[in-house]
Image 1 (cartoon, one colour):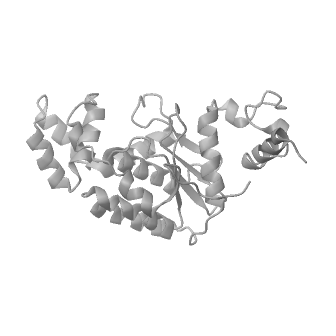
Image 2 (cartoon, one colour):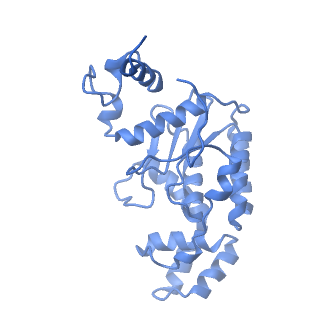
Image 3 (cartoon, one colour):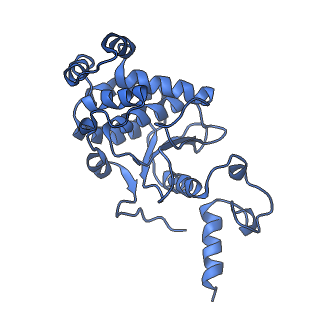
Amino acid sequence: MKSTAVMLEEQLVRFFEVSGPEDIPYMPHAAKKSRYEERKIPPAQLAWLFRVRQIAKSISVPKYSDKALREVVSELPRWTINPEDTRQVPKLLMEAGVRFILVEKLPNSKIDGVCFWLDSESPVIGMSTQRDTIDNFWFVVRHEIEHVLQKHGRESEIIDSDLQGDQSNQSEEERIANDAATAFCVSEKFDSFMARKKPLYYERDVLAFAGIIQRHPGIVVGQMQRRLNNYAYLTRYLAKIRQFVLPSAIADGWGQVIPISL
């Protein structure tokens, strides 16, 4: 009978999709540094990434279509007004051929989302909903969608660990995705609104602007917090959405486990 240690090692080999124990990332006896170590991806993020990949390989979706995904993007705004309508996102993305998976992040790790491809025609979007707020959800969703549309992540996974943090050293791929996500969340009218109301941003003005662009106020507040670097501003509008998204999504964690054998 195999020892527990040997069985665990075999499971890790299958989980990380390597040829042997010596190739498991971050193991002391690894033959050489993996590309993940060279990219300085922390072990907790790597485990999360491979869980998303493992689940993605186990599900089927229609053939991916750029056209279908762009149609989804054009339809998404109608679901941004009410928090409960976030439940529509998993179905819409899967119908466009995008594997959309939610996996709970490991403790003490930061991860917002990931975009990668199983092959040249099979994009995957993984999200952690580490910030259970309506603004973060929509920003990350649109950010990862843009990665897919731009064919980012085909050569190497695009891992977004802290999209609300410092973006001063962002890559061109990240700039493109961030610009698309920002435009989606608050439209091209946002800069004008911020300039006109500076330096006093009254709550009534924020609510009026959200009504004009037809977005939930929390989505506008989230973008204003980032712009003002004031994450205490009108936080009561940052509605929680995980309770609505999880039941309609392929989700692993939060007390539920997708049974996939190693």
